[in-house]
Image (cartoon, rainbow, N blue to C red; front, side, top):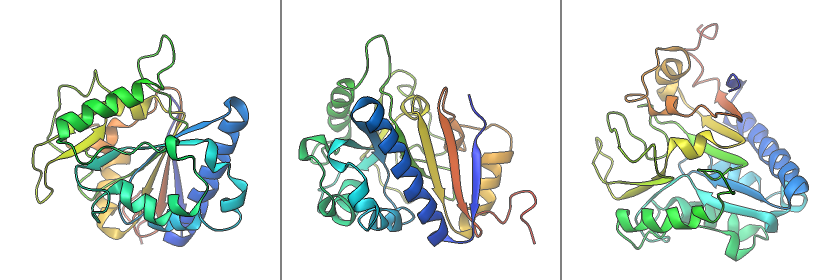
Amino acid sequence: MQEPQVNLFKDLEHLTTAAALDFSETVIKSISEKGFALVALSGGSTPQPLFKLLTQAPYRDSIPWSKIHFFWADERCVLSSDLQSNYGQVKRILLTHVPVTPGWVHPVNGNLPPNEAAEVYVSELAIFIEDEQDWPSFDWVLLGMGSDGHTASLFPGQDNPDEGNSTVIAVTAHYQDRPANRVSMTPAVFNNAARVVFLVSGDAKAATLNKVLNGPYDPLNLPAQRVLPWHGSLAWFVDSAAATELPGEKE
């Protein structure tokens, strides 16, 4: 396991520029080596500028979009037209503006209840599990972190017994003001990836980010700590506001 890389940026704009380059270089390398790339994306406000930037030059024209399989790290069980849909967000901002292969875009079926949607997604991911492997091997996974330390739909205080033996779980227990009816990939999938990138922006996340990166290992209450790739690399892309509590960054 490699040590996590913590990359600090002046603001969200600089963070976004670096993330776009990281995505581009990673998927182009994967496609050159094996003919395709396997990517998992997340929703939320922080990655939206990234999705928009990728539709512009040079990324729009230099990335072999048609050779990328797109999955989602987590999803709400809502219609894709719902503004809360992670897939819907990426589709509106990114996928309708670049030449993807339709059959290579793999959204969660938000029309189904969480348990059924998770079962279907397990089956879809199973197609990409190589012989003698237990988990798919994503080339690039994009994650975010909430101010409470959650990532994907893995929330503090929730210990799902299926996390260790399944690629996808249904998330049905309410957490704070977050409604149930979600589907999430499990830490094992993230940890089998070649590269995982966290995007973290804003001072509201500063204290929790420091706990995740430098505090005691407490994966039940800080689910982002569960993401530690076994063989791949983990990179944190952090803007100056989110970095204020990190050692050496306090004013």
